[in-house]
Length: 312
Ligand code: AKB
Image 1 (cartoon, rainbow, N blue to C red):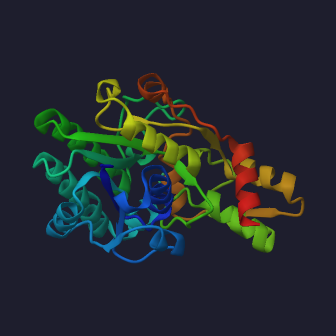
Image 2: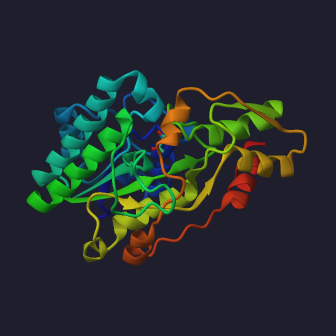
């Protein structure tokens, strides 16, 4: 029988595309989507869905027992910009949901866990070009602090309780199927929507703010590849650096202008500038490449083409 998997936070930006990809790969009935609210029509109609709060251990346990779940992907989280406004809510959601799935795995109710970390684990004292896998990590945001603590807990549960937990430090993810919510890298999605609708975009980051980014198809492929890798190839149990491209608002605006010549960008930086300034500009992901063969497919050119074609 095909193993059953549960996605917590399935209606969000990553959760939606991950659920659809897993359903395509493993069959609809064995991929259970869940969230605190219902999501996009194609997600809701393509397989089982449970209304579920990721901070409620008993509720998750009931669903795990009911569907005989073997793997959990925990995609529910409060992202960087929103977390600065609601620090305690962010900490409670990001940490309690993680403890719930780690404890289910510790109790051997599930066999494998995926948990997303982020480039937000790094901070202003981290070397910001080609940031290494192991380096100074002094995050200055609520979200980054929760992700760094989460990484330490993942490594601890693996070492102490032999929990098979796997993780990626996602860069900013660019996608067209579901809007992101509350992140600092969200500008790189909003810019496409505004370019098509109004031919103008007011960016909340300065023109030269370079950040690591990735097209969603690459991120989903990386996630599924990591989860299907032989455990003996996984040398990192905190979270893997992962990289595809880096660019600034000015550079992405120029790529859009190449396709939409009358597109104009203006800059009106807000509190998110300080968050972006504390993050790396580029990432060294050689461990992921060596351990499980990671290789990105989409650069800025290909990403721009995909976004404009699909949103137009
Ligand atoms: C955010 O901007 O908060 C996220 C992230 C980089 O983790 N997209």
